[in-house]
Length: 306
Ligand SMILES: Cc1ncc(COP(=O)(O)O)c(C=O)c1O
Image 1: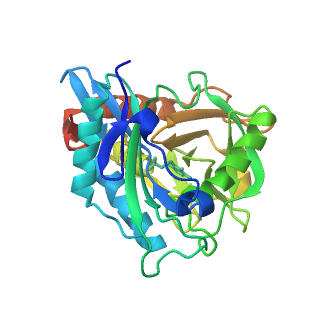
Image 2 (image 1 turned 60 degrees about the horizontal axis):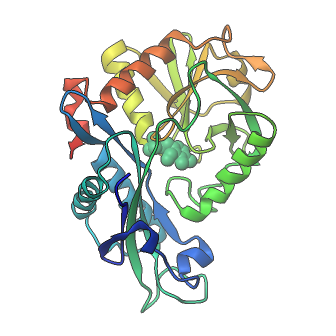
């Protein structure tokens, strides 16, 4: 692999030199917001393409706004740096891109914005093929950890410190032998997966948790809803989901930038449907893969070519 670079403190540095002080506020208090963006090799164009980059940078700025962080760059500038970094790192296959807006000052005290606080932007890339091993479908559990509430740490913002909640759910699930976990709200409704949104198929319709159920408003979630409606004529209903609906769904799958489309074939001790990857799930998985690789020309504007 060629020498890898990251963007930090206003410039590109060799990855190994892109380090921050132990006193950095974001390290002390988790006061940062981030995105997970994916770029793919586009076989027909013979170059890399970043999937739904504008939507990711829009959400990053919204997350920063919720926390009161002061971004130093616009969405367009962050997008240009992303394209530049992919070129510098000579990425040639599926690549995960991690931009972060973080509190960079060396101040003790958990306050977000007062005079003199500083925020900065950093960016790096990592090769990433599959986040979960999904070919035969995955076996997931329902976590005993509850999703953070909008009035505690808002799930709608992708806050670095909030991923302790994700890590608790995912780690305990992993130790119990599950591929990943479904997390409930404090009211006991289905929120989402540890770091992905969830869809169920019930009677030929797609159902996904409403955005008021302490979920991240996922970009893959809206991509899948659009593909389902336009390509398969299947509508998505966004509403609160009870836990027991998980057990009687015909099909279930996770979606997310890293996860892509991950069919769920078993939830705790119950199979989903007949225990095989569902046909609607498989169609959406194939459509999503084509869309991300630039093979659905109709959706070409979802891709920023590098
Ligand atoms: C908590 C959480 N929910 C959902 C998602 C899926 O969001 P997206 O499709 O925008 O990647 C993610 C992934 O980033 C996540 O961390």
